[in-house]
Amino acid sequence: MILLRPWWLLALLPLALLALWVWRRQSAGAWEAIIAPALLLRMRALGFVSPAARRGLVLLPFLAAGIVVVGLSGPARLKAGMGQDRIDPIILMLDMSPSVARSAQLADAQAAAGLVLQTANGRPVGMMVYAADAYVASAPTSDAASLQSLVAVLGPETMPITGSRPDIALGAARDLFASPERLDIGGADLILISDGGGAGPRAMQEAGRLREAGARLWTLGLSGDAAEGAPPPDVEALVRLAEAGGGGFAPARSPREVLERIAAARTGRLAQSSFAPLVFDDLGRWLMALALVPALLLFRRRATGEQ
Image (cartoon, rainbow, N blue to C red; front, side, top):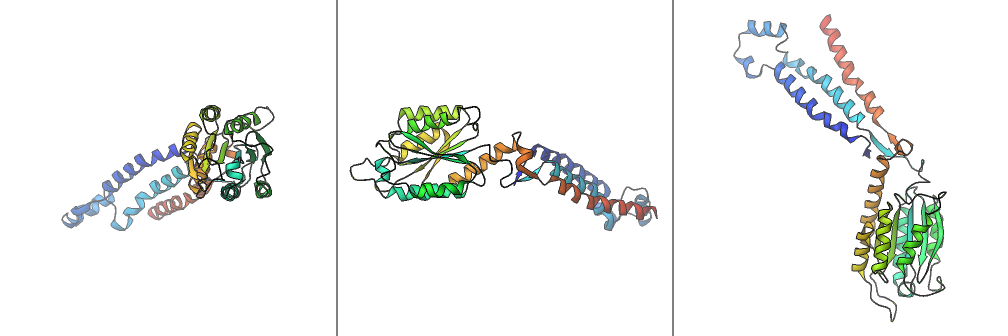
């Protein structure tokens, strides 16, 4: 749930103050116990004091107005798969260098990638693999589940040449959006699953370029035992890389915090974009209908008073 027009909620404060003022004005408070009955009846007839049983009715207009204000704030929910297949893609980037592909870390990388695909929620997802070079395994597709089979067959023989060059992979991801007929990189979330190998100054520069273009880079760190002869995982390098790319870091074995942050940030961006009417179901109109209930009670009160 999100509010499309949250600034409307500012109107609740003066509305509440006005309701409090009216309530106090209509109430005689402790004076009812000591004021002369004839005078109290006259004050009620003039409208200065309301009967105790009817004082709550003076708040009905404010209750209706409050419901209208909440409705105008635009409470909305994201429509599943509606108008989202061409905006804000996810690019899944898997490190297939020997330190990952030839170790037990590969299973962690595949599990993390599978969770990303499961939580895509209709977003288009593309997939890249890299070692000494980078390759596009799949262009962004709205059928994220179809990539599960690609993730499952990754192994030590996937890449034709060995090495670890995340900078090349990040540059290739930026080039993936260079063509006008392709998706816009603005709003894209790149999720790099790696042990941190090769995440040096060049990779930091590429991450910064992606951030300047409107994308965000998130990293999921593999921290298990590396392959024999390979350097140990460099988690700190992945943290710095994510910071340079405007995203965040999480361990590959527990990535849900980052995935929740990605989903929340994306929902907020869509709410402020021109795509909002296409991808959100605005529930405000139902609250407008609910505001009729106290309004009808108010009309009933007036009709009873006239009789």
